Image (tube, rainbow, N blue to C red; front, side):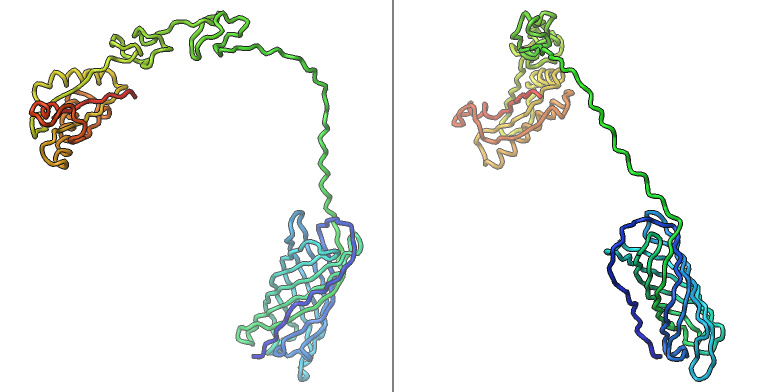
Length: 378
């Protein structure tokens, strides 16, 4: 079936109109010409039409509903088939673009129904979809010239459910009414300037930062962090009661009754155990040392111990490294069995490194087959 390619045409122009009033309703009487597809049976494929468009605007929205009615009187058929009246009713959504100079462009999309008064096989009543575009040219507060082109596609049973194409070119006059009041301008806040009296304030100094102003501080050079009395002089504090004042105590949480050194930290308990040749078994005579060391770690949980294992130089370096690791782990296991928290312990083997005696004699090698414990304060 022959088809026509129908394209909307926009009319462009320029003018100046300064009034930006908004209206709720628009009523537009329109007149124009309808160009039809050749298979509809209309003589010369066209006819004049007129109508009325009614649009409802919403403040702060560019999309508005529109109801339109178009009527054609006595459109002639080809081949002496007489003529027919046609009435079209459509409902569209109209999108209004921002003003371009003095012109207001718009586009529309919708659907409707066409009633053919005297139907023939090629031209029958039916529903249609439509799309269009146009411009409005305001020339007074409530008046504007309007031009638009609307494309219609009607589904007709006579054409195997294919669309009959129509293009309407229309001009008219738009009358707007129901002015929407403009929002009241925001009132600018009133700025009140008050006179403020400036009072000079003398800032007291506290040179040693003990909380007592210099004018009242009898001990103006108190060490930082000291607890002072009302005269700003240090109060001797020994919170853990170990005989070392807080300001000099490097271990301020020593358990009550623990013997400490001059820094306030527990006297270190050393652990040194020697092993038999080629053995990682903890000797029985080390039990008392292990008991004492375990007791120290359980009472001083802020200490951790690294158990370091060593060997003499008999055997390969690889074998001695593994042997020294087994010795360190054996001592660590013995301490855990005595109640020491495993998180306080670690074990490492150093093999033949760091000998404390000559490996050239049996006595020297016996001294080198050992573990040593290194304490650290958390």
